[in-house]
Length: 341
Image (tube, rainbow, N blue to C red; front, side, top):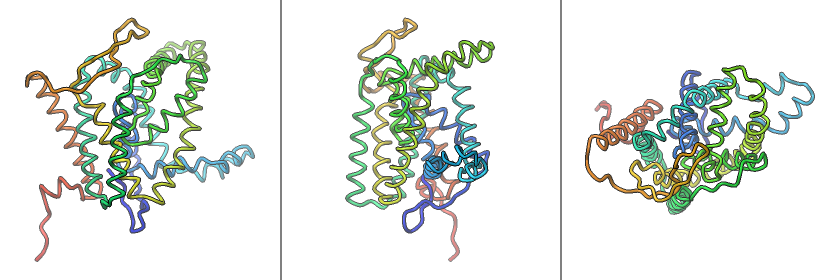
């Protein structure tokens, strides 16, 4: 769901309630643990994308200097905590609770999971495209974004190891993708051979915390969490500024390109796939690493359930988008309020 924009193309202030931001964070967290959906897509859909970039930009060198001078009040004053706290809380809760659930669904019911997210992303593409002013440059940007995302999501994962340096670089690249609608950080981790390792480490960390196994918690934190998070923080700080500048200077072109990213990403979350190549993971399980999209062999009960979930996802985002500003194109086609003569 796109942010409202003023005449000069800048995002208008559109404050959300803490409950809405927490729900948005939950959606972003759930999306980021699925190798096929972007947390940035969910932020775009829920109308907080440009607010999120602005919030990330507020953590700058001036903020760090104030912290080093122990000017905590001044440092905290420049951070939009009313926006960030419920959003981060939602992301944290969602990732912590859903990491194992989503992993299970990815293994056992991937078609159904992808079908639902396909509907979510398709509805957001319609909502974004209908609001844009389409120019030649916008069409070129959309096509370029579509082609790039389509190519990216078809890459075959590699396994370069899991050293702290590799995790640092993977985190930096993944977080850049994570805030791009349609290019998802979890899939970047998958391509770099880090996704399963990081999800397993997170699940084990939660288990060790519950068991009060602090030695294991410390080991995982030093070897995995700190390098990964450090890369994410530095990558996010740099890339968010580039995106904010592009949105400020070339708003329509940038949004058109981001829409293309989302269109191209649909290749990855098409529900029906034929697996071509497998690799053995750390648990001795066969995991598909190369695939191609296909049509279902027959219209059976499973296919109808997948189609139903896709439609449900499409309707859900369409309704949420219309509640946001009463301008969703699908809703306006189906229902127009009566106007006085």
